[in-house]
Image (cartoon, rainbow, N blue to C red; front, side, top):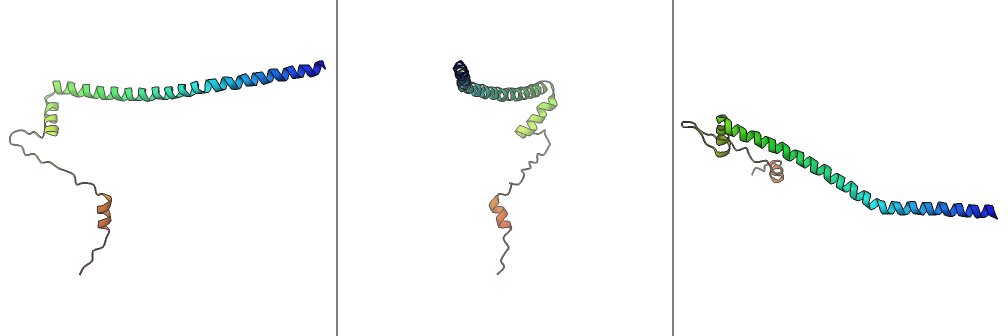
Length: 114
């Protein structure tokens, strides 16, 4: 009888350990999911921060160039504001609009001659 009782006690101990393990997993799993989500958010924010730093450095470079180089000021005046020096002629080139689906379909239709 003692051997049967030992088996029962061992079985109960194993059952309790398994039950504790399952409960622990159920309690820890949501926290782990939140942790992973927050970790992904941190990676995304770090990427955004590095992109913002790159843009800031580029803008600082442009500002320093505008402050110290007359050529940079002239370039901005010509490109953004369409200004030119006296005696120069400005020619603006507007690229043709991209064909949309309807105009492409019309081009493929054969002409009917009366």
